[in-house]
Length: 278
Image (cartoon, rainbow, N blue to C red; front, side, top):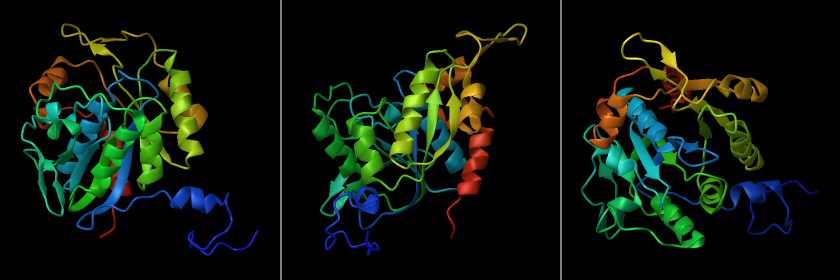
């Protein structure tokens, strides 16, 4: 095979690995400078992926980074609710401006464009994937150190679109403690491997409940399997999030930015390591 010239327009090799990797990448808006893109993924729904996306973005902003959240879960958007974002995204001739939270996190979600936040998005896969691409190409994100992408569950159209269209620097896989989850996590990890996307680590949500009387940790879903999964894949466990009434109340009230807790301190340390160079 001849040496790659990195010019796919003049290349006549149809199965080139570089073509697969590079030719589908979309350029962000010309007024956007996005340094690091981190996807938050799960192999199934209902494990708290959006919550982890929100928590990671809050920690990033608290650390002084310019932070953005792209809500790619088009049919189940929940990011604006957690941040209390009720105003609509505004458009101009040159693009769409994201909504900013109270602490300055930039958000784009389909709910910020819909007339009513309860309106269902009844679209087919290609249309949904196209909307996610437009969130990347048409939104004027500005200068962003970390962008967190809240992915829909599973390994279908939209995750594939994100992995192929956005320059994802790595993903964080969210899981719950059930034994079945090991198989689900494996699917997400295998997809990342197939797409040549680095896996930064695992986060376990709904890990335990702390008894308010004695302080004992109660494993509602049984003993965790996250450590053995992480060990088998040589991955770090970045955090364990408990059932916490205060955290749930903060999300419902749109006040996630006020959360307190050190459950993701290892994930916070990861951001410092990934810190974009000036």
